[in-house]
Length: 64
Image (cartoon, rainbow, N blue to C red; front, side, top):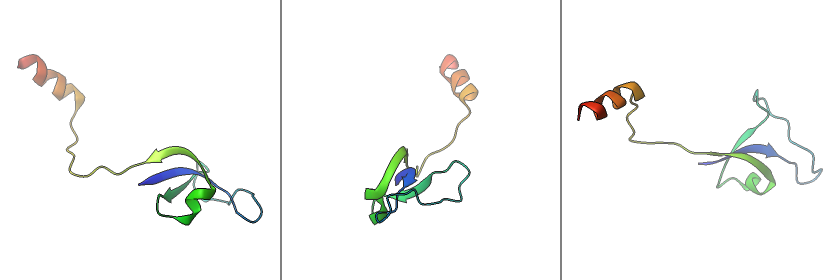
């Protein structure tokens, strides 16, 4: 878990180049670079979840 954002170099205060297509770098909460990151979004991981089709879920709730 962490954030996706623009990481800045602490010496130059310039953005650190990234290879991602959206220009954001994933940074974990434990990473020391977090304090130099301007976060654009939260990054989370889901475990133990089952994907469902919303159409099937709607049909099941009407039938109940």
